[in-house]
Image 1 (cartoon, rainbow, N blue to C red):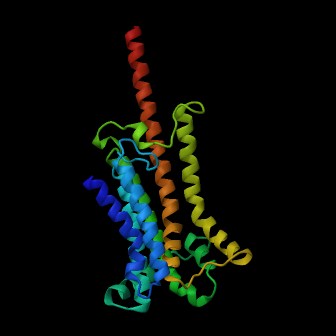
Image 2: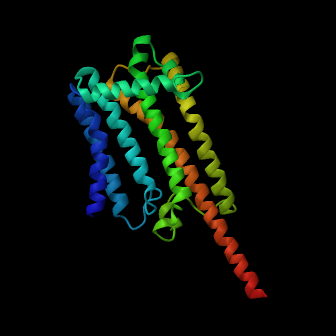
Image 3: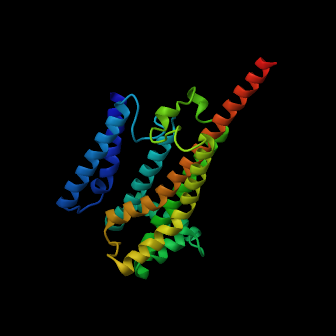
Amino acid sequence: MVAAGARAFLVALLVATPALLMPGTRAETTQMIALIGLVAAILTLVEYLADAPSLIEFRAAPPFNRIRFFSLALTVILLTLICRGAVLPTPLTDGLIGFGRMIGEAMDFSFSPVHLMLLAVPGEAMVEEIRPLAGLAYVISLVTILLFVALVRILDWPLGRGAFNFWINLPLYDPTAGGDILRRLRRDSHVNVALGFLLPFLIPALLKAAGVHATSLSWAEPQTLIWTMSAWAFLPASLIMRGVALMRIADLIEEKRRRAYAQADLQAV
């Protein structure tokens, strides 16, 4: 109960962080964010209190979800501080803006995701404001992916804490439907990795098309900007992590089958 409550509180706090740190948040925005944070906290509490989750994957295979949460939290907090620094500058925010601008300029080359995101921004003045956010968010997502891949390769995730429970960790995955489970796991792994690779390029194009043919995104609204940049960087990283995790589970199942077949052959002899 305590662990589930702590997770629910952290999720609600993450949702409310931009509104808490940014000055001049409107009352209507605060109420909407409070409602979203409450729903997210209740969902997290129910999922972690239940014996078997219904939505959250890899619940019993830490630190998969912890890495994702801290990556998103770090992205949101740093982007919020940078946006706050534009209104209420401090030595900390000035340092973050300078660091983010340096990373953004390094990542802003032809056909890079950061460059494409900046092309979707209307106005040259907004480009200079958004470049530190885009560069910092994308670098955090890359570091997150590399950290998880190292965890899988070096620390033998998810076997570090014992046997892997397929039913609890993949509640949305039915291993009895649609042919061989290995083929499905590897196919889904490839799809997740491909989508994760393509999304940083597709999202800017979709934002640009929405600005031309539909309602344009309010780039001047700090909270909208923070969550847009966070989602643009976090969702692809999360998909790639899921793809790597599914491939790892497929390898474990294949290894277990190989041992079972070898043992059966020995018994037959």
